[in-house]
Picture 1: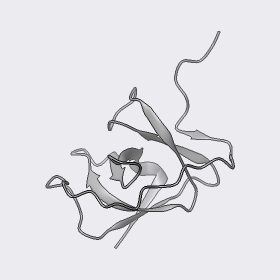
Picture 2 (picture 1 turned 180 degrees about the horizontal axis):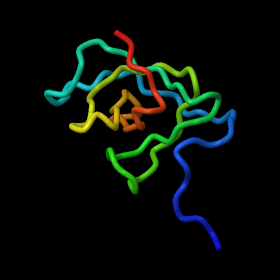
Picture 3 (picture 1 turned 90 degrees about the vertical axis):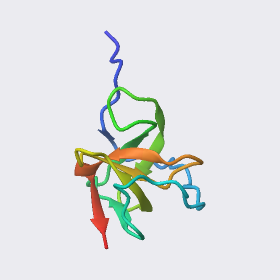
Picture 4 (picture 1 turned 60 degrees about the vertical axis):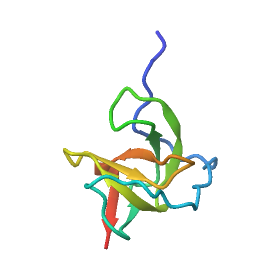
Amino acid sequence: AEATEAPAVEAPVTETPAADATPEAEATAEAADGQMVTVASNGGRVLVRAQPRVPSAILGYVSDGDTFTLLETSADGAWLKIDFGSDGGWITANLAQVNP
């Protein structure tokens, strides 16, 4: 049987889309000014999703050690919205480290 949902972390892969360097102007009250997020996935890649939930459309992947601007944190703190692509994307907070 085929799996329908990809795991949050996969084996290391060389293909990593470039993050859009344009900062998002509209962040919610949960946004942190100037904070950065570093992916901490022990060498794997992390799914970037359109919404802070599973299932949600996969926008791409980020790799261990990649750093992005933090745009927003989900109300429950489980997801982080990062500066990825044109509208940002969500990664699971347990595979990232928020830096001051």
